[in-house]
Length: 74
Image (tube, rainbow, N blue to C red; front, top):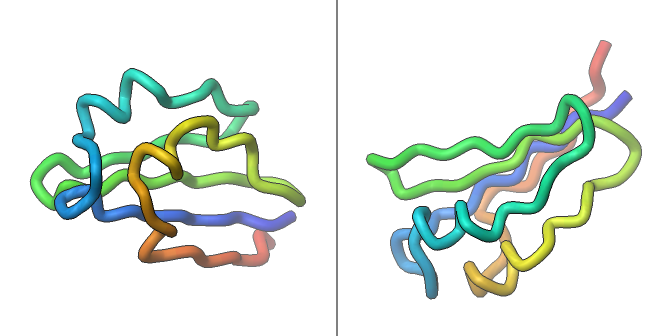
């Protein structure tokens, strides 16, 4: 199994965390949206062979995630 972590900094993006929360799509079981208000960061932790549909999130943020890592889950 693969775990993926994506993290966007939204402080210098085209949107805010509050606006993004209104557009977060439902995720498959086990996957989770994460956020850090103080650092103005939004992230995704996803498990499986493919990333779930991210909906409008990438378009609203207007850039690729600053962190995009894959890990083998033992």
